[in-house]
Amino acid sequence: MARVITVGAAQLGPVEKSESRTSVVTRMVRLMETAKRKRCDLLVFPELALTTFFPRWYMTDQAEIDQWFEAEMPNCDTEPLFDMARQSNMAFHLGYAELCTESDQTHHYNSAILVNKHGEIAAKYRKIHLPGHDEFDPNREFQHLEKRYFEVGNLGFPVWRFLGGIFGMCICNDRRWPETYRVMGLQGVEMVILGYNTPTTNSQSNEAPHVRAFHNLLSMQAGAYQNSTWVVGVAKAGNEDGHELMGGSAIIAPSGELVAQCLTLDDELAIADCDLDATIFGKQTIFDFGRHRRIEHYGIITQQNGVTLPPN
Ligand code: ING
Image (cartoon, rainbow, N blue to C red):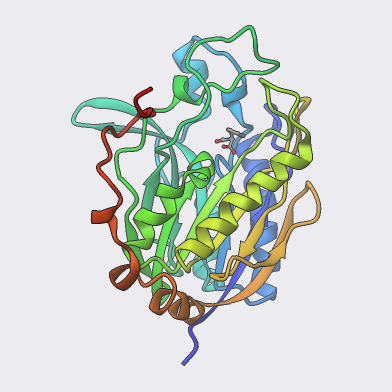
């Protein structure tokens, strides 16, 4: 019996500083309407979908920083997305900047949620691998201040039973770390969903843009293949106030093969029928962790962070 889910990668084009949440949500609802016509079961929006990629800007005033965050979810700006989910019988993924209060402390996370077909939040993830830096860096062509504006996610990499399968989430830079997929792979994940806002160029080197596009797919295709899971990676793309973000949103099969990809840097839908049962063969043969993985023979990991070099 196949467990086919029709997935829409809902890439967003640029969101500039001046664009309102209402305007962005209107664009997102339009993509949901198209996805409904194409019978999508799940629609995946990018990381920080509701605003411009504000970590590129150096800010010191907390009120100015907090304007980019959502204090509630859903809220009056995003409620139309939840309404569309209910009306369209369609689940969706949303990345956004989360402002929350936990035990009387205010926290700022780069977060993502899974919303079910009833418009209810079924899962939440908070970004763990925060790239960039926390103070203004004059040596960079542009800033990447995620370490300044977000705390490290405190929810780990859980998986959830969702839409008849096992789903997990990560966000952007998380996709570059093999641990991200393996931690979820060890929990039987069948589809990893992620959004990204990735600058087309490297602020610290003259890396060619095609290399960045290569690394984007390499990371996601490897994660998919090595854990026999679907991976859906969706960009916010295009030129935001003079800063280029790459596109390349993709739906990747458990074999690691590229099944669908967005071709533009605008609002665009790439759709694929994803059979969750396609994950079974890899999990029961080459990546049957129980039969083949021998972590007890890998040698002792002397430290969790940094590199342990061999003696000279
Ligand atoms: N963006 C980038 C990403 O990981 C980056 C930052 C790009 C880091 C390329 C290293 C190399 O895709 C976010 N938002 O994490």
